[in-house]
Image 1 (cartoon, rainbow, N blue to C red):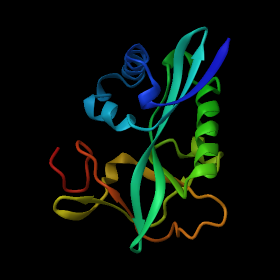
Image 2 (image 1 turned 120 degrees about the vertical axis):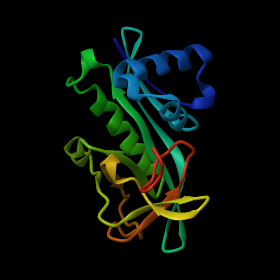
Image 3 (image 1 turned 90 degrees about the horizontal axis):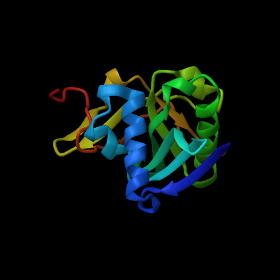
Image 4 (image 1 turned 45 degrees about the horizontal axis):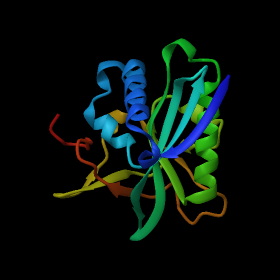
Amino acid sequence: MFETVIRHTGQLSVAELRELRDMLEETFGPRYDQVAWEHCLGGTHFLLRYQGQLVSHVSLVRRLFEQDGRPIEGVYGESMATVPALQGKGLGSILAAMATADVLLHYELGAFAASKYHFYERLGWRKWAGKTFVVTDSGRRPAAPDRGAVMALLPPGTVIDPERDLTTDWRPGATFAGAPK
């Protein structure tokens, strides 16, 4: 009945990518644009199918992070979604738990912007307490405050300090404080 699949973007067929894009557009509506789509590509996709149909998704995409001049190997969560008809049934929690385990096993940091903090806090994610920045062509800029809090997952024994500044690479199409809309 249910099937979970974990694949890198390059392992997804054209038909699977089309199905994924359609599901994300159905779930997010008009705000899911080309930029959002491009941001979810190039990483590991956690997919959940029900009776053969794609019903839930999250991707973890490698990002360049830095704290106090130290590079950090991390991933950024993108396009976490469950189709509206099946929301609230725990399907997103299944994929969020799988992605959480992947971060804890393979990376120094997991991060993403969120507004439903409690959903992720129960899995060990927490709001980043320090300031967040992006590196743009014109220098280091504060990250966009309108995206909600940055949620972070730090494996046990990390030297990363969630009270200090965190910087990441800017991606085309992403916003930052002061960016034109």
